[in-house]
Every structure is written in C-alpha cells, then in structure tokens.
Length: 381
Ligand SMILES: *Cc1c(COP(=O)(O)O)cnc(C)c1O
Image (cartoon, rainbow, N blue to C red; front, side, top):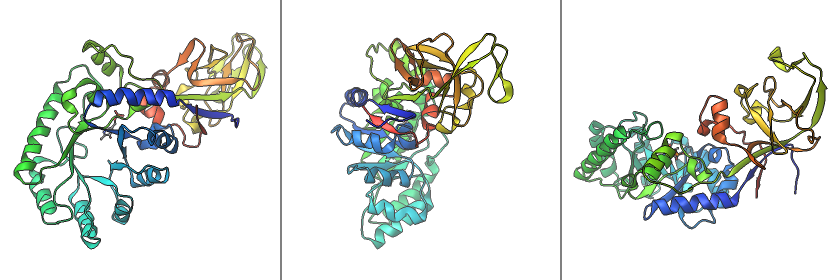
C-alpha cells in the first residue's frame, strides 16, 4: 500500500450500509444520490466507483455540467440529474452525455430547445417549482410561458420531472413550513396538468425530508449527506427518534488521517505558532502534523480542536497554518515520529466526527465536508 502524509480512507462497508438503509426508506421511489461538491468532499471518482456496484442507485445528482462529465468519465452510465445552471456553450454536453437538466430559467429552456430541434433529439428536463425556498424555482404566474415553450417544441414537449426543495426541514423539529411547501407543490403540479405539460416524475426530498416524511418521496428521492453516513442535523435525528425511529441507519464513510513528522520539546512559557496565540504553562512535547487550512482543516480550529494519537485526544496548539498544525502530546508518552494521527474518525475508544469538527469550527458538517481539498489522496478500504 502506498503511504501518504495526509490521506482519506473511504469505507466501502459503510457506504453499502448507508445505501441499503436509504434503499429501504425509499421503497418504490427511485434512489438518486447527490455527488455534488466532489461527492461532499469524499472524492467524486471514488464514490462513483462504489455507486456503479449498487443496483439500487438509479441516478446521480450533480450541480454542474463539469461534475456530470466527470461522472461519465468515472464510469457512470445510468441517469444524471443536473441541479445547477448551465451556459449556452455547455448545452452540447447535455446531449453528448445524456444529462437531465433542471429548468428554472426561460432563456436556457429556449436555448436547449433550439439545439434539441437542430439535433432532432429529445431531452429530459426537470422543472423546478417555487414553493417557499425562493431560490431557483419558478412561480405560479410563470408557468404559462414555460408551458408554451415546452409545447411549441416537439423535442421538449413537457418536462420529464417536476421538483422542489424544502427550506426548513433540517433546522427545526417543527415542520409546518415543510407541510405548506408540499401543499404548494401539489397545487403547482395540478396547474401543470391543466396546462397540459404534466410531468412523469415528481421529486422533492433530500436526506432530512426523505428520512422523516414518506409523503415527500413521490417518484424519486435525492439524498446527499446521509449517503456519506452523516445526519443532516441534530434536529433531524431528534425528529426521527421522536417519531419512533430506533435504527442506526448510517455509518460514516470517511476517515481523515495524517502522521507525526516531527516532535519538539518546548519549554514552559513559550509561544506556539503565528500570532503567539498559545503559551505553554509547563515544559511540553509538541508534535508537528502536515495538515492545514489548505487541506480543509479550517483555521477556525486553532486552539480549539483535538486530534487522536494512539487512541488519545491531543489538543491543537496555536493557529492552524496553511499546511501544518502543532498538537500537544506531553501526556501521550507513546507518540513517535511516523505515527498515525486521526483528524476525523475513530481511534480505539475515541472518535472525532464531522459534526464535532464542524461545531468546533463554527459551521455545519456539510460545509466541513465540502471544503475538504480534492487533492487529498483517497484510499477505499
Ligand atoms: C444538495 C441537495 C440535495 C441533497 O441534500 P442532503 O441534505 O445532503 O441530503 C437534494 N436536493 C437538492 C436540490 C440539493 O441541492
């Protein structure tokens, strides 16, 4: 096995467990897994290599055309749903790679229709409906012009899918707003039917909605964070448990490791790192670990986070640098150069989760994952 100074291990078993749980929850709805943001920092290529082995996964969802093309290059031949916007220059790639774009803007629908006509090729699109998130969706009074654009082009005809996104499932245990959004969605779908562009596939649910409310499943579900073994939030987990859920549904896929590359004896009353933000109170042993904010180990973890060495917690001392951190090992006598340091994951009885790191750095697990540098080597274990 190749050795690295700073690397990510991906557990295939954990991935399979999560997909199995999600497949069970999804029931008859199609399972579409979100691999945007470099598969939530886990490595797009690696996650696609695992996804191709799972028959239950029918779709991948991505934000950009660039990501969609990378999915194809990594061997994904089934459907790909595109969430984000695209440039006119990118439209040929939609046809070349058989992608299903989300539509929320009239000009891009016309541009897409124009090329579809020219190539005499139909394209599957998903119309995004506005139900209260006020991000991408189109509103009720825009429906007629979209319907016109669809019906006037035989290669568009009508949207294959209609979708929406919930604004307030993750942040609360009160789901009234989600219920209102769902109601608006159904009303808008009824309007599409009246306008004679009824879609075949309805989808609304990301992880939280999917786990908590079966009524959001419709024809397809689009989980992201849960695929990687994390709950969307504490509130989602609590809501699940309050609703009687008892199963341990997910296992974290990612472990992040580095090594001790140097050990120093530092005298009492010495400063450590930039800004002299930490001062030793006793003679101390400090280990230097080659990971930093350039890798996604946020500078906000300075003087706050812990890493695991030999199953023990070692505190980060001083500021996180671009490529290095300093950690205190005064009480870890067994620590030695070359020894593995766990930044995220389990080491014997201790565990540092993405949620813990996110909370130490003042953000959420989603952002922590998304900021992991794509350059960190990945090993599937
Ligand atoms: C990212 C995203 C998802 C997945 O969300 P998770 O909370 O990670 O499950 C689903 N739908 C849309 C539109 C998204 O942008």
